[in-house]
Length: 498
Ligand code: ADP
Image (tube, rainbow, N blue to C red):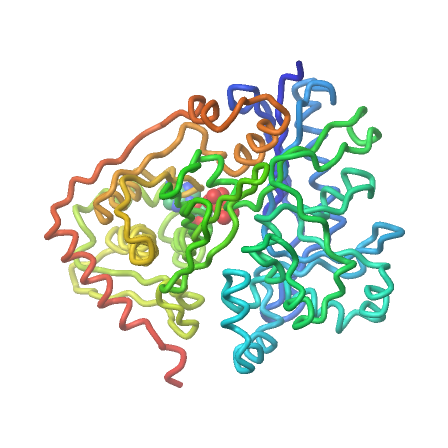
């Protein structure tokens, strides 16, 4: 029997390949960065061909470094940056223009227009999303309207659309399979999360020809075989999920009420809400977690725009630390933040404030404050913002949580996690395998390939690295949170006042 599961983790700044053994341990890992292009203010593009080449490169290298042959790989799982749009020629397989990345704001005016026309409510009901340039629909519409001849060619059935998962599946299968899964489809703003089909009304609204859309298949299942020339033999592709949903799965958050938070560049909190979508009253998104067979898990999602990025700013903007790990050492030099709060609203604030005119600030400075307090306040800001998102989620769900699972680069910071547990009054659990995104894709593939009998077996294999138990008094927590909320208030609408 094949020994390994291979995960392709196609991120925003790098392509990674991680090979796991059957116990979920990492046996090989290779990562390669690729070019980011910012052709205009607020525009972000990738070269889809470079994404494909870098992804293939790391996969071959990861296999080569442990001497694995195609027959050693039981299945491939794909996880990816979400919402990014690729359009390519069906005949040649060549992209017709650069990929428009999820961060790209070029369709902001189109989204404002959609809101003015009163379409938002219906879009929200059908897709679970808020109208924002972030999602794929207006990006795809932009390509059809601005790339020479694209609309006519798309209508004639000559062009195909896909998010990054679809693009990789297409190339991996030598152009034989044009497919996606519901967790990726749900981020396009063209997919009805209730019927789990492309939504005809929305296709009409955005003027998108249905013939260019991929087939939607369950996240765990057979997506096709790789072209035998790529890996010296074909390998089945058996798992596909967007990065945040894959991380939720990789954290074994299989049951309604299970929640994970990822502390990466941004912060992403996802809660499994079971078989029914829960519509938020607090500005959170409702989306699909994954589909296994006919069984669909929905999730609620809230994001923090600047999470670990505030630590990068301490390093690159202020020069207060040399590397991210320094931040923990500095923060623990002082017993508290001396009343200093740092609100990293560098690009506005997301849930639950939704204020794109908010800007960053440091509040509460006295002559007693020094660089250690500022570093500590920066780390604490990650925890406060996360607490705000969790608070919004609890408002919607109304069921008390018992714990939260954590991952992402900044979850290496023990001070952050202890402070987070204290501020939430909730135990946090950090898994032994922090590569939860890749493991999520690999385990979705492993289920479909029969490597695992079911989610119970995955749960049994899952290991805790460390738990963080709250030790702060409720009074202290309330006092700190009150200070944070007063600081946030002073950051709101800042850029609007001029
Ligand atoms: P992404 O996948 O979003 O690029 P990662 O999960 O790799 O991000 O996490 C990288 C982020 O984590 C960076 O913003 C970095 O500043 C932050 N980070 C990494 N290590 C630490 C640490 N020890 N303490 C605080 N933040 C950290």
